[in-house]
View 1 (spheres, rainbow, N blue to C red):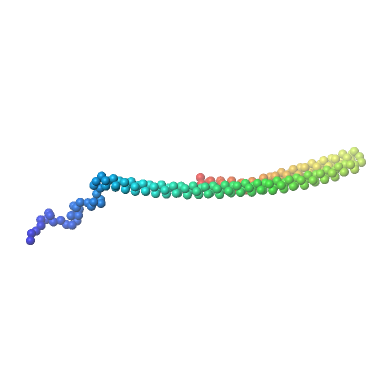
View 2: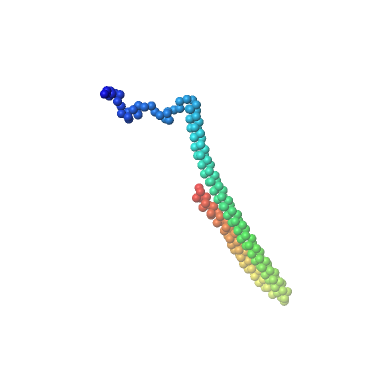
Length: 179
């Protein structure tokens, strides 16, 4: 039997390394194949870009919808606070008007009593003394009623502003977290 020369005898690993690369790894041979490969690569890139853009648009839309919902909810709360403040103000003004009417009624009755007392005096000195006493009492009543009106007005203003102040506080806290 004849022996093969050592140079021609190769191991399988060497033969594999010397063999040409498979056609799948090689660039397409003809211009048509290259064009088709370029179109496939471009289409794959376009699909990937579209998917990425679509995801970003969806995220942005979700954020916009969430922001719009929060804005509507916050605005609704503001409207409710305005309505409550208006109701408190209206009820307070109504109570103050009732108080004014009661005070006015009492003043009319007092004036009628004073007039009757003045018509029953017998001397000028008695009339002057009575008039002085009535004027002092009238002045004390006016000062007292003015104090009551001032206190009631301040209390009403505080009560009516409470819902609005609460909303402003909430807004400051909310925007401080956002900023």
